[in-house]
Amino acid sequence: MKFAERDWTPKWAMKLGIQFHLAGLSLSNTVSLLECLGVERSRKAVHDWVQKADLQPTDGRSPNHVALDETVIRISSQQY
Image 1 (cartoon, rainbow, N blue to C red):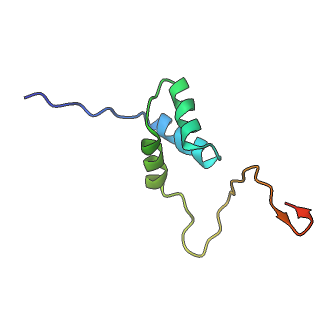
Image 2: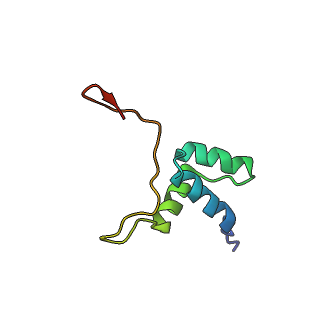
Image 3: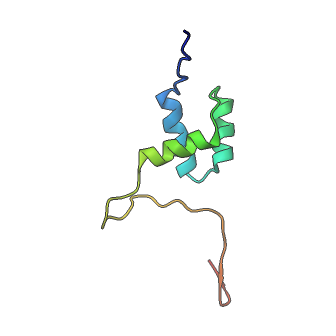
């Protein structure tokens, strides 16, 4: 009986994928960049890596970094 070998993702690729996504890239864009580096994974796989990394601050603590996107909101006449 032949068993399928598990296709392991290199740790460097997982770390890079997590960093790309936490830096604000969408899952699709993160997957596209990884593909350029020769690592083909699904959006679900990258999402799972981010969830398993559990990089949220512990209760009562503030994060050291905040990720922002280009969204502009208007409050009264001011744009933020």
